[in-house]
Structures are given as structure tokens and as C-alpha cells.
Length: 303
Image (cartoon, rainbow, N blue to C red):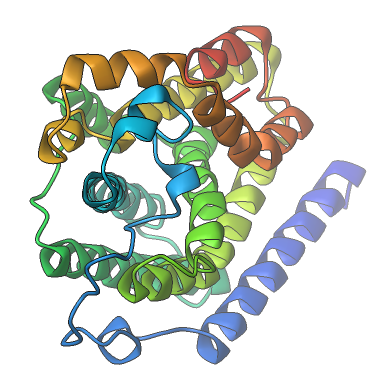
């Protein structure tokens, strides 16, 4: 074997070993939301939907003026908007992963873990949908333009673009949910669903990172710059759709004023940057944090 061929074989073996370990982890540590969550328990009136610090209005003059009932209502609508965005992107994710595994060797651990991931995402989407229904919050949807962009992305994205899009969505939510699952004044239904999602998504993120590393190993400069820009564009679409503007009216607030205060909210911007720090380190490591991509991330306070 030549040196490059030997390295390729070694890389394939390493990837297969990694996928096998993820499969073993899934066998030992996975959850059934129908059993783990008490869907019949009444919801306490004064528990938040997410830690107040993660509310888009926390730290603003408007937040200080709001009643406690409005704060509770707002955070419940915010978390359901984020869950709805999660469902939307998990459906995109499932289609991209399934397409990536089309006519591949089903005996490979990577193939089997990909299907395991799809099964996990199906359960997560149902879990989020039931949680929002339990909270009595209507479904929130991405705006029309974003929905059409998502349709194109799930149809066309491949390789590092597909897994990069998957990773940015999962990384942003992961940091938030690690706080929510420990929030003493957060609804149990949100704490438990967050715990389930964090544990199982940690495997998905490892898989996505490995796929990105594999695809980026021999990528040229032109493709690297194009991929970095596309992944950043996907990230901006996700972030802009996470909290639907309708959540403010649902809490009895003036939407125009609320949005103005959100745009000026330095606390929210700092929370976003902190939640994306690990993601930015990884993108930099893999050559996907170019100057144009950084400019896009900066538009939505990810850097």
C-alpha cells in the first residue's frame, strides 16, 4: 500500500471504531420519553418554561416591568418556539442523514448508528411536540422564506455541509438545555426532556464532528470557503427562527417594543456567544471559520 492508501484505511477503521462505540453507548444510555416523563402530572402555575436568564428579554427594562405571570408565560412560549424550531430542523436532519446512508453497507457500524440517530430524532420530535401540547402552547413555525431555504438545504446539502448544519443546530441547543435541565424553577417536563435530549444528542454531535473531520481532510481552499459560508448561513437562519416574534404578543407585550429591546439586549448577546464558544473552536480547528463566515455569525451574536 502507498502511504496515502494506508492512511485512508486507518481513517476508515478509526471512524468505524468510533461509530461502534457510539452504538454501544446508545444501547446502554438511551431514554424512552413516554416512560421518563410524567405526562399526566399537572403543571405548577409558577414554574418557568426555561431559566429566566435564557429569556430573550431578561435584563431589559421591559423585563423589569413585566408581571411574574407574564414572565412565566413568555418563557413557556419561548421554550416551545425553540422546541418547534428543533422539530423543524430534526426533520431536515433525518432526511439528510438517511440520504447520506443510501445504498451503503448496512453491516457497517456507521450505517447502523446513522439509523439509530434517526430513531432518536423521531422520539425527540414527538417528545417536544407533546411537551408543547402539555403546556398549551400552539406550534410555532419558521417564516416562509426560511422554510423554503430549509427545503432546498435538506435536498441538496451533502458531506461537510450537511453535517455542519446538523452540528450548529445541535450545539446551540445543547448549552441552553444543560442549564434548563438543572433549573430549579423550570417545569419538570422541560427539565426531563432537556436531560434526554442532552444525553442522546451528545452522541449525535460526536458523529457529526467525525463526519466533518473526515470530509474536510482533503478539501481544497475553494470548497472550504464555500462550505464555511454555507454552514454559517444555515446557522443564521436557525438562530433567527429560534424565538418566534409571536411569543411576545402571547405574553401580552407590545411586539414592536419587545423586539427593539431584544435587539439591544447585551445580556442575550453574551449568552448566545457563550453557548457557541465550543462550536466556534471546532469550526476554527476544521478550517470552517473563515472571515466571511465569521461576519455571518457575528450578525446573530454567535461570536
